[in-house]
Length: 359
Ligand SMILES: [Zn+2]
Ligand SMILES: [Zn+2]
Ligand SMILES: [Zn+2]
Image (cartoon, rainbow, N blue to C red; front, side, top):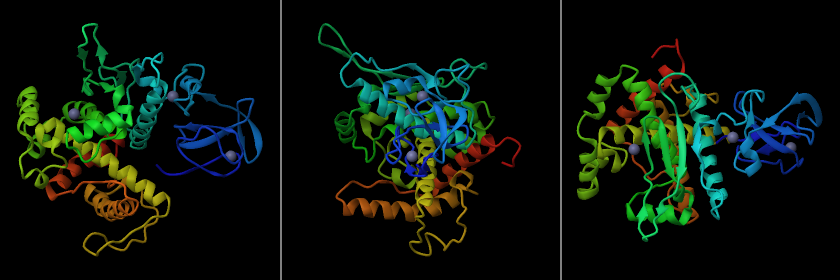
């Protein structure tokens, strides 16, 4: 995520900050103007050391310490544009769940930020229409007989369920190791599950099914059987030549969701790098020297363009992480068929994000 500035003192602040460490004022993010404002003790926006007549209203979930967004129209809404999609939040009577919930909301805000940058449809649970995006954060149920009813992280017609245990670093790492995944994060879960939602909205409703099938394959093959086969036999040995991850090879829907997630990973990662002044050229074949300092990854010309700029950045980030003894930030290889799939997602995001503009 790119850095922001405190409206009061001009200090660099982060998207997640609740308080400015320099001037000490409460911070709130305004998603409608994409900026971070400081609030004086009376709840007025402070700019350049002065209180203004502008009132600001924190999202109701700020009281729990899980949200730092402001509410645009305080007369109508108590929850911000990110929190209004929640249907079930974690049971806060359970020890540690406030912290787990905070990590979930943080990841969700990063993803909602990206969707808003593209102006993608974000229908809330109370909005009109037949497509709604909502979230439930649920925990496995321990039965009296000692059995466990597991909660599956997944998507069902716009309703996304995330197992609260995924917000537990140790538990998520245990699952990652068990599943032999190179990467497992909360932000990755949100991006992946949203891929399923936008498949419904942009591919199915959007009249792009034929093109989808020609690139990703026929999604009418039995989904349950395909997943079972994947978990039983694993991915084909040559999956890296065709898919962005082993799991993407399980079914065309999963391929789409995985590739969708990568499109957001790359865009957000690249915007972050560029906003800190990081510009890299690693090898002439990977990247050409660039003078366009104003390049906006959210308005990239193509997925190929995005990928060409992202690869040197990801190589550098991985190398820095290895210097620190940390795992790779981006442990993936993007083969030509994957870039073609990313191109399809690019066309969906750009066409539906900007109505009226050319596809
Ligand atoms: Zn400040
Ligand atoms: Zn909120
Ligand atoms: Zn999925």
